[in-house]
Length: 86
Image (tube, rainbow, N blue to C red):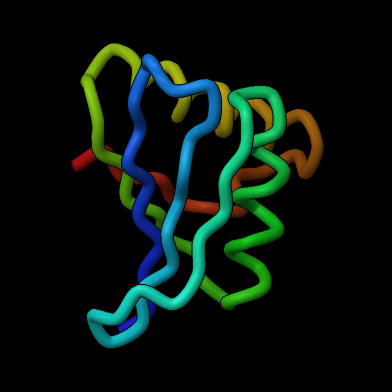
């Protein structure tokens, strides 16, 4: 099973998302909040994944998810990823 999981921390200058396949961590992408939407979409396309799980402090995580969703609507006119807060 393929999965991308983001572990967000409001006190880090860069945020990280990890790609897992069959329970093994395969790759990681990091970026600042401004870079993250494009990097995450490129990362997901590279591994053919459309669902992303995000964990971290609620308020901060919801803000990041909103930024990514706004970016997708602005650039692609649709949500190309499904982002789940876990």
